[in-house]
Amino acid sequence: MTLALKIINAVLILFALYMGLKQGWAMLSGKPEMTDMFSKWDIGRTGLMIMGIFTMLGAVLVLFPQTFVWGNFMTAAGILLIMAFHLQDKNLKGVLIELPFFLLSLVIIYLQYPFTKH
Image 1 (tube, helix red, strand yellow):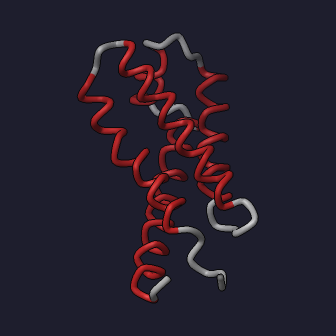
Image 2 (cartoon, helix red, strand yellow):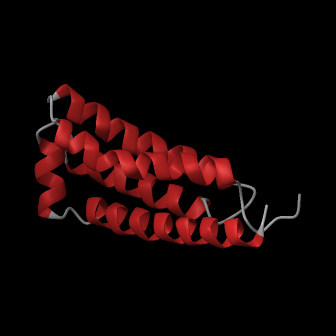
Image 3 (cartoon, helix red, strand yellow):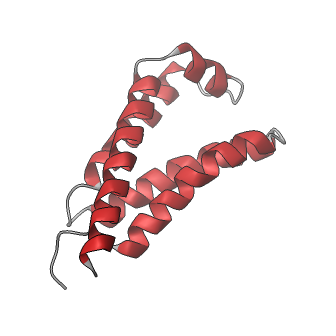
């Protein structure tokens, strides 16, 4: 992989880490916008906290080469779950908001871990 692609992928990973920690913390701490969104899907406080831990764990696992794919998988699975709930509500706007973050995980997996020698 060229140096430019490695740098781009590293920036994408850092962005995914930031977003994962930010959204995971919002879920874990029970921010009103998160509790409102998840409560309409009958996910209570405990479920929201579990989703928050799952989201933050996935974001952190992306940083290590041994858990890179698992972290991206966890992140993508969480986003896909939210997209499925939005589709169940026929909320295409919600799906379109989540779609770039889902694709980000797939692009990061495709570009692979940037700091290993192949």
